[in-house]
Length: 246
Image 1 (cartoon, rainbow, N blue to C red):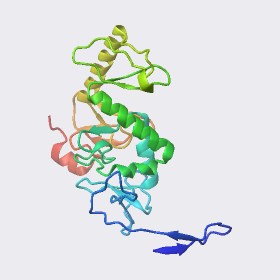
Image 2 (image 1 turned 180 degrees about the vertical axis):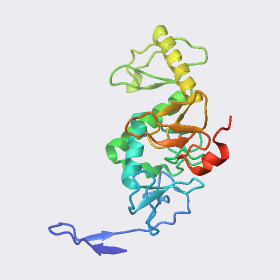
Image 3 (image 1 turned 180 degrees about the horizontal axis):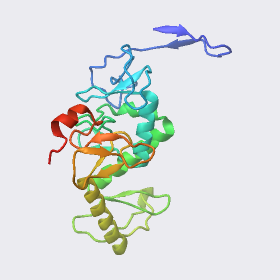
Image 4 (image 1 turned 90 degrees about the vertical axis):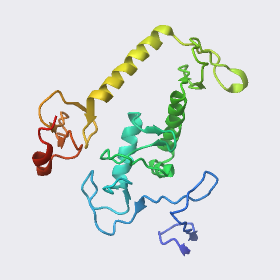
């Protein structure tokens, strides 16, 4: 399909559009990718984040088919990227789940993150590669301007960043005290992950130390009342079904 640009003073003459079946899997070698989660909001469904009715929207692959406008999706991605809270899945790669935290809702077609724009997408690719190295048991060279991924042998306590062939800086070795501190910090993060749940709206970790399932986000700008049991906004159904579940 082709057409002519209607913008005034546009030097272009014609534009071409191509259609691709969204049911077919894509590969890195293809020049066009079907973003199957983005669709026209023909039913005027409100964005679950800003509650506005926008079009087009992104529909998550969760059971509830939650809808988010593209502006809020961009903000959601950048916020999670800044906090390094993307999920590294062995099969899918570096992805995000539904903004409501629904299970089994990771975005499978990673080209959706192209919406971030070139600069943020480059950060996304860099962080994804770094996370892959860390998941494989490797480390990243902390030398300024390097950041090369290093995969030490099992049990190896000293690692040197090799400078040969421009693949590293040649100066990095593990600092034992810094490594011990990093292990303590990792243990703290695991404790936070195990004992808290994120607020469904702003995703700040909240700890429950007893009492009922009725939670209130401590963030002054959020203050969402939500359910610890089901992870959604607090409703009468929560009150009647599992208010005081242990």
